[in-house]
Image (cartoon, rainbow, N blue to C red; front, side):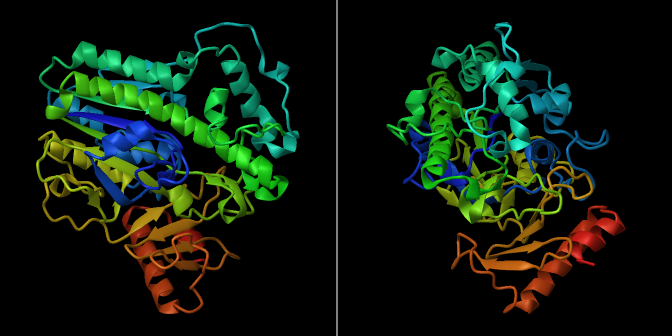
Length: 443
């Protein structure tokens, strides 16, 4: 079997109609989802962008030992293992962070989609339409991205369009091979949320206020209800734009008859607070205020297509990003190295699959920059642990899916049990003692 992985950066699980149909229009992905298995309890472990992908490449949960960097030399890497098994491997992406982390090195060929027009515009020439303190990093990233995108005129100028068109060409060039693997990665949904205006108008027609398109990575008290709705609408527009061009690639797969012998897995790396829990951003920029990773950010959308007749419509078992590597290898008939991740292939064949007992999610706490509490997810509950003075939190996700009612004071037994599980996990993954004491034991 051949394989395609589509990774859509910053796609919230609830921004797909197949998960929640009352917010964002995603008709193409929803159409694909009707034939695929929808994973309903999938979570990011190592957070955010590069760490999640390293988990997916290696089948390991790496955050206890390291954060934002590529994998260790001795770790198996998904494309590398496939190459050794005779697969021709390709990477098409506009997510420059992946190349910065060296993840492109493990493929036979890679194509990084970048700005092609030299219009001479400099970041310092960009005018920010809202107060600088209302934009992350005093708008530095906003300015650089606006300068990069200022020449965009037609929809095919946007990065997601160019990436999906190039991926479609890769299939035309390589699908004749006996064995092949393609990873497609787009940064389009990541802020700045700047889709063509007609996409924003789908969600916020007639808006004339300040053009908030970039989260502040802070609390939402800077926004009015109207400006926050506009920001959410810009995000929704990015998702619908991305859906259109992902649909182009999925239609290419269909027209070429590749679904007959190809598994296609669509996923994301994390979500984004857009007003939930009074926050806007995926993490804080204040080292003294490490943020929790609730389901709005930590839960992943994952859709998996295979040609199996007994493939289920949904999978409720607890899964994580590290499962991608063993799943793809299993589906491709390649021997699996030992991994923390578990293959979903049995479930996709209609066989029993238990999933994980726990998923542990955070950014590596000793590297700074993205201070986060540690989330422990079980099939029924979410617990959060962090440095003092943070007190543990506990939520019953079945009764409280928005994670608003903290039960920690009433369920000390469960909190203590999950804390002990976290300590054991960090020790087993090779975390250093000070890290364990500070974050898991709360000393």
